[in-house]
Image (tube, rainbow, N blue to C red):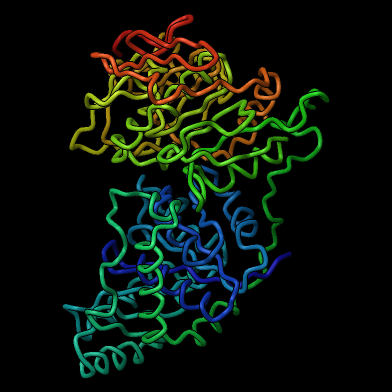
Amino acid sequence: MTVVPRLVLSAPSSGHGKNALAIGLLAALADRGLDVAGFKVGPDQVDAAYLGLAAGRPGRTLDPRLVGTERIAPLFLHGAAGAGLAVVQGSMGLYDSLTGRTESESTAAVATALRSPVVLVVDVAAMGQSVAALVHGFRAYDEQLWIGGVILNRVASSRHEALLREALDDIGVPVYGALRRQDLPSVLPARRHGVVPVLANAAEATRAVHRLGEAVTATVDLERLLGLARSAPTLGVQPWSPQPPAGADGAAPALPPCTGRPVVALAGGPGGSFSHAETAELLRAAGAEVVTLDPLADEVLPADTRALVIGGALPESYAEQLSANRRLCIAVAELARTGRPVVAEGAGLLWLAREVDGLPMCGVLDAIGSIRDGLVVGYREATAQSDSVVGTRGEVVTGHKEHRAVLIPRAGQRPAWSWPGGAPEGFVWRGVHASQLVPHWAAYPQIAARLVAAAAAAPATVPAAAGSSGVTGTGSGGVTATGPAGVAAAGPAGVAAAGPAGGSPA
């Protein structure tokens, strides 16, 4: 039985300013010395990253579709352990969901599962007394939902604010703050940069979060909001733990005593990884030593690397920087060639390809990528088509796709997944599992257990990265590497030995 002061920040629809307000609220309270935690409803790891930057601890997603409704409260309690306030930023409108499953996957459903008060952020720029009708409608739509009050955004003037407050007072809805049109400037780094500014501890991201914190401090009644948050009742569930119960499915097998803790490189930066925060926790619980690898800056793999995980938040827009890091591309190709586990999700699949838009990549996969204008987004109920560390053939997982890039071919000779209405997708080759589908490992802890077991069984010697003088690009986008160990990686996909993972177009 755990009590965590908490608020769900939502809105009538997208575009009302709840993202900036949630970040600013966390930053404002953290600046006052309060231990805070931030969460994002849905699969959006970018918003979660900025919430984490503001809070000073990892931001996390709460996605009922990816992890199951029953895990929402336990994952929340795990991520909010020790916090004096947890802020959950909603997705879209309060009663909306990407799949139309309002009763189980909307922000309202998450608020209900967390027994949390909801504060509505309302853009009132073109609204007067109608704000009361709008808020009353949201409150009456589901009488079991706890609408604790509102924050008004884009208020035009003092007179406008007084009119709005009077209208809301008539229906008994508290107003916790009122921000003028210029109070929430568009200061966050461009969305195309994804989580990179946060992971790189970029000054631009830090300044933006600080500016939003100042805006909230000046316009929002923080003490009254804390009072509302502290009125949330006890949650009668146990926090989620990355440690599986003894004998449970997905428990980590005993590692050979001579190996110690195998090193698993997790792609990211100084500020975190491209994976969900729970991924690193699960890998450590399964017996791994997790070391961060920055694919944009590091030229060599961590010492004694036996496995590599490239999470789904790696932005597609950084293809040029990934390609330019030739030494690391060759080290990753050699890691894959020797059979060590390599799991690539989302844009990590592009990094392993032969080339993307003419830029040479790692060449692990005999596939060519191109980034297009249209966005592919949505959930998939996927069935594993090949045995790998991610899934055994026939195993079903739920994942999320959000990408502009396409690969030709779409799948290798051993595809990773299939789902209704789509051709087989992804690549399984030796220890590689690469796909644009991104599952949440907290729902499938066996992935971490299998990966660590495979890493422990892998050879201990680290592939040596070639010097810059030993790397040349080929006309087909591959690389030729001759390093100190005499390793040669040549051919269209950049890997000699038994050849890369290829296949026919799906």
